[in-house]
Image 1: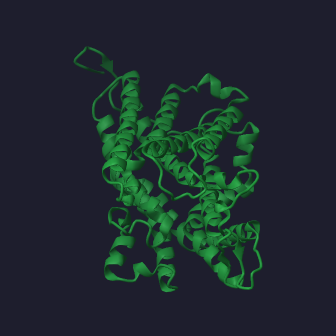
Image 2: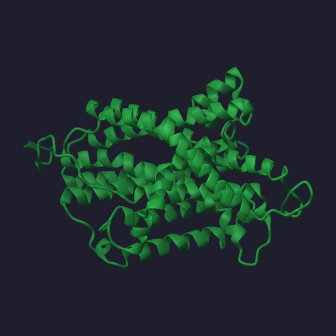
Image 3: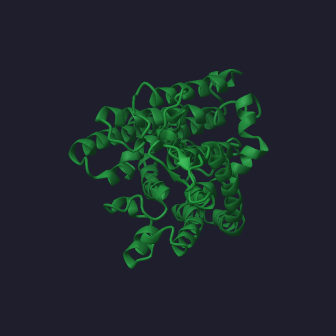
Length: 410
């Protein structure tokens, strides 16, 4: 036993048995996030989000970029939980070298493969220069003015993720370097997550007011740390209850998953309708709307994830849905869906007689025939799942095997 300055006795650091917790719903969350991003981009590309609709569907479709927030919370939860559990158990944290090796093996091979193919078919022409090559293959485009949405446009979020990977081991070391009782460690972890969230909000407010023309700054890690902080918070609470060998009582209630998703749906409605952001997803908004949108995106993702973390994972309709075979398979290839879907949609436009969006917001062939949004959406989903499956089998899975081998470095 060791003692703190206050005389509190702490357990010696020791190797503890590996945590056996499983989170079988998380492939489902990845599938939801990928499909949100896909529908968001397809709705905008077809002009559907700019139309008037009796049910107000375009307003909801314009907010489905919150799929990125879901990805960020999923990532923060899964990556920080082993660190948090190690802190509570007073044992060594995961190895930093193994952490980086596994993260890079997860995101770079499939991304580089997609970027190379799209550059070769001239779908990403800004990559085909020396400077562009370094920027986009290095995933630093969000820090280069005018380049943040270049290459594969939606992969700005991968650049943000890469920054998070660099930051997380440092943050975990800061939280775990001082021996504490588990109760004091819990307090330090929650204060740390709150500090991250607050810092991010202050940064967004500052950049919105001081640098309104620097659009790329909203993609920086500091602008999105609030979302990662929410995932870290869930990770801390999950690790805390795993350390105690318990679960929060409320999460054992049968109604918990439905109530949690109902709160997520309420936040989604709030950001889509009352916040009055309009149908155009990239229009100028006020500082207050910007902060509120980000906060509500975080709330949607937070309550969406809770049933997949707490409570019996084999009970309830919500968890059964997340664990259905089709949803799980979509989650398995969700990275490929994320990478390839805009290009697939653009190819569908060419195959449909070079379809274009008219001034009335409707997608038409060159002969003037209207193409329903549902036709493009379903075609995109079916084709991109096929392409994503190929990406998984040919690129992702071989490197994932190397990623698993890196566990021996821990």
